[in-house]
Image (cartoon, helix red, strand yellow):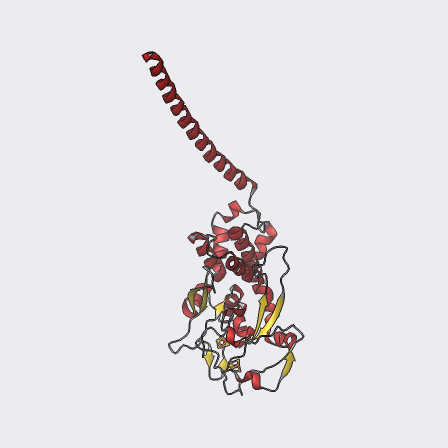
Length: 307
Ligand code: SF4
Ligand code: SF4
């Protein structure tokens, strides 16, 4: 079986297994996956299952683990497809199998990751960069791999019905803003620099909401950002609200969007700092100019004296 069978990001992987056809929500597909198929759980090994922040949140809650322990036990750091953005994927066992698979199937099925729900229907967005004001064309495609016998099953449904059955719409809604950040980075390419510090921040915020919450409430974060009390009370208690807030923070800090407001005094202090830098540069330039002028005057005076 090829690697990277399940993906969050469209056509990048195994294009030869992607049927050359665009599907809409009303297109019909013939597919069914159930414990009776001969290939049952064949797709749960030798794969990269990238976890979105929403996947991590729902999985660690299901397993009743703090984020740090979940990350340590079940994930491996990696770079998200074709970007320099760090993230995590499920750490496979020594046989290359997902740690959550048994002969009976997926032990975390109700909370399984987005990539496992999407398979074998992918979603593509053109204008993937999620640029503001640019409409994106969205369509679906079908991945048909030789080992997957679900396509031979006698069950026909529309993509809309299939997605509802898999609970994909909620994943889409909760992943959308984060995926847009990754896509935006992807469309900028490596030539656009992102500091190591920014990458570390992206990793921390995307994988460990416990740490992000600590960062908000115990660092100088609230001296910098103007966050109203109601939002603060909500994100302190509600992890989904915290997750949504984390996307806004990342968009604002990595791409300079206006999702979060920086405090007036911070903006003024920054402006003063820049002014300070500018005036010291100006002073330096004036000093250099005066030194040159004095040197030229001295040379002229010498010339005059020799006449
Ligand atoms: S999380 Fe579940 S569905 Fe996904 S690969 Fe693992 S066992 Fe299979
Ligand atoms: S039918 Fe396809 S999706 Fe279902 S277990 Fe088999 S390989 Fe996996």
